[in-house]
Image (tube, rainbow, N blue to C red; front, side):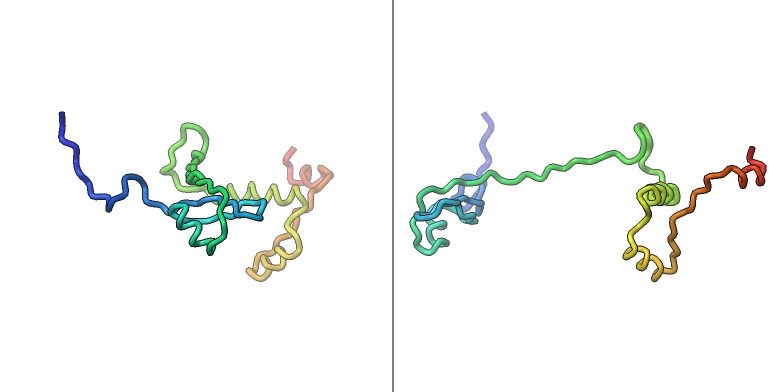
Length: 132
């Protein structure tokens, strides 16, 4: 049987805290959120008020979720194609009536003239440029 390693935990056998508690006080219906080590610490923090019930809240776990970049099976080592991305965003903005006037003013301050592209309803210009 292997020897158990002895680690000095300063007298604490588990995690040290402080933890988040919900404490119900005499005369109150809703719990009070308290960050404390134990029941005595809660009583000290609430300045002598009578604590009826205290429930330790579970620790919040950070859920890390990642979304893969690019289409399925692609390599991430490739540099991003910003031009195509901005064209897609501009298309979406144009379909929704263009940016509001406040944003257009900010764009003009950056020397960017953003106007909604006027869509032609006739094919005359296309025939003139010999696309058909």
